[in-house]
Structures are given as structure tokens and as C-alpha cells.
Image (cartoon, rainbow, N blue to C red):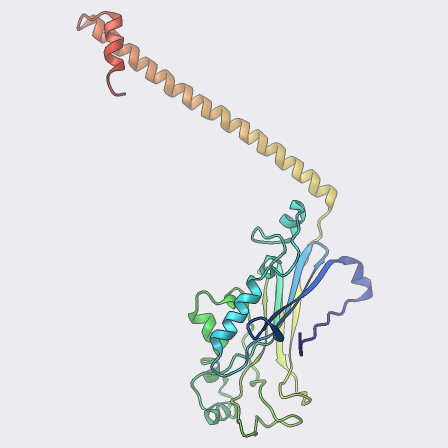
Length: 301
């Protein structure tokens, strides 16, 4: 990938808790041929919790919302990683019946980067005046990512959460200054740089902010998270699994006995009705037993 770099730092005291590390890339530039747009994806297990980090750079341009949405769909739907064929690992470390080959198989996902979503149907001057007056809510109503989340039921990032944005747009600045793009292109400011996450009950974001570094035409953003991970004790898991299997077999045997009893009861009821009719035909109508049986057999039950 061009222009994308992902780095995860781990305390030396925690290194032994990390396993199954895999990294891959998905190219989206020029129809998937070039790495100027796309994603770097890294996944690993922390104890027995699967975590996936996705660093994206999506299609640029004010009018390319659909292209960006398609990039997201292609990234999330790709089988980026080797699958786990161990049923125990798959069932305890991944969600939705997944085998770990796709991003959304993982219990915790953090997606970030220059997503390039812009502010729609507003002139540059109106956007800058809203920023200067602190009226960010007016601009966020037109933010392409938020609009897609509200109005597009198939939008890939609907499965993710983003904390409310309370900072100014991070793009595009004159490098080394606090002035929004003063070049001849006069690009409209936008919240291109975003952080979203997924993992209900397992991850909580504490902070979402931008930083005033002027080395780029973007302002970087950061997020602080608390993540809850699980640790499975193999011996106890095997014991519980065995107990579950025994309970299942016991419930299965009980259900079979109940079904057999119901079938037997219905059969006895049908036989009782049949012999009652034979007795009636014999005693009241004067038919022989053989004639009564033949007549009953020719009638619908």
C-alpha cells in the first residue's frame, strides 16, 4: 500500500498473551489494481479474544460518496485472512459463525484512517463560517458518512459505532498553518479522518479528539478505548463441554421417550375407535366381523 502505515505497540509484559498474528492488504485504487487506495488489516488474539484493526484510505473527491461506500463494502466483505478450521477456536474466538477469514468475524474491530467523506451541498464559505461560529451540528447534518449511516440500509459502517464529533473538520489545511486550503482549488473543509469501532459489550471509547500538528494538510485524530478480553481455561472448558453433551443426550433421550408415548397413545386411541365401530356394526347392523372390518378399511380415517 502507498501512504498507509500501521503500527501496534505492545508492552513487553503482555507480549505472551498475543497470538495468531496475521496482516494483509486490500487494494482499491484503479479498480483494485493499485495500492494508492485501500486498507491495511491486522488481526490477532489477545488471550482468547479476536481483535482486528483496519487502516483505510478511501476514494477522494467531493462527489465520490458511492465510490467510498463501495470501497468499504469491498474491504469488509473480502476474505482477507486464512480461516481457522479448528471448530473449538472458531466457536470461542469469532462471532456470527465466522471462521476468522473476514473482518466482521472478529469480536472487536477498530476501523480508522482517511475515509475521505466530505460535507455535502454547502459552499466552502458557509462551511468556514459555521466552523468559526462553532456551529458544527449544522455541518454534521451534511456529513456524507453520517448521512450514509442514516439513509443507506446496506452501508457497511452501520455495523460500527463512532463517538459524536466535537472537533473542527480535520481537512484540508495549508501545511504549517491553521488556515484551511488557500490554494486555487479552495477545497471545502471536511471530517476526512475518522475512527469507528465494533464489539458490543467488549469495547468502550473514552475519548475522540484531534491534535494540532501542522506537518500535514490533515489534522490527526485519536481515540482512547477500554477493551474487555476473555481468557478460556481449557480444562474447565472441556469439563463444561462434556457436561453439556451429557445434558444434551439426556434431554434427547427424554424427548424420544415422550414422542414414543404420544405415538403409542394415539395408536391406542385409533385402535379403540376401530374396535368400537366393529362392535356397533356387528351388534346393531348385524354384519359379520369380517364384513365390518372391510367396511371400516374402505372408509377415510
